[in-house]
Length: 93
Image (cartoon, rainbow, N blue to C red; front, side, top):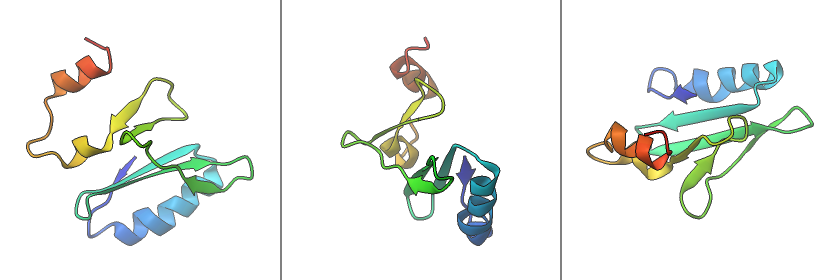
């Protein structure tokens, strides 16, 4: 996962993306707080990363870590949701 900052936009979206793809990283999350944008990429069998959108419910489910998911609106919520609330939704507490 990368959190994009104005100083790292080019590095995160181009350089690291290519490095991770070449390195076989199976899933890459790019979170851009300035643009309020979350992009999720998954590595295909052909070795190319492709955009993997969140579902119609606004939830992205990890293809690499079973059971890990995130509501994309959590990322932009003001104030951020309480950690205990998220842990409860995940069934961890």
